[in-house]
Image (tube, rainbow, N blue to C red; front, side, top):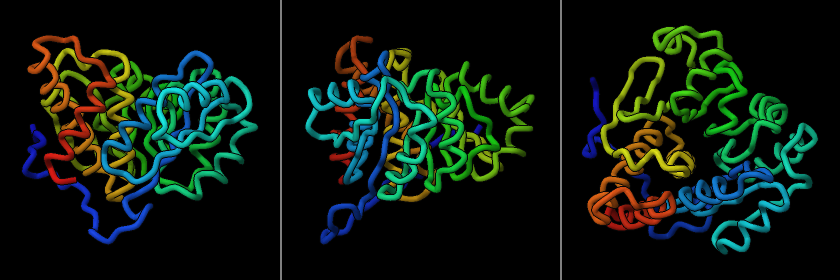
Length: 270
């Protein structure tokens, strides 16, 4: 098994004379009437990766909730309680101003039609998470990082007509699949990498949203999907391990992980 080692990871760098936007801009599309926290966690985690700018596109009520939660995220409010196919053209126009798009966090099953149409028409590198994974096939996307847990992975495989991981490698193209678990797997068309940072506390709601946000943030800075996936899983798990030790138990929250990521990046000089 080929495990990720910290000394092999390459964090994005920034020039001392860089200007706003040089270190990447991320658009996060998600949220629904039932879920507002997921998309906010994803956006904040993307910022903690070191990216310059994050805009969250979300249904109106979700957007106002995010405005109340934090001033750090720019919010584009769309009409309605869910994303529908009527929003596709609006999001395709909006994506032009960003380097990477993260889609799926809290978006809800009611947005399935929007997700399928958008990911096939998008011209941007994507990070695909949560409910968005459940309604796509691997052939619909390219240049994407897909971040399923076990059940979402089964649904992706079924939707794609793929029987096992060896067949997935043949069909995966230039995408990267991050299968989250006790030991995370990062699957490409040629290799599978494994990550053993993290602990049982990572099963809490929101930790996957943080991981997806980190992947999007690193991807927007580096344009390297595989390295971004490795960075996201390793440092997301490392933050959880630090918090487990510091709090002497599993009382840490997903928001604590996002905060801890910022401290880790500071120590790393990012």
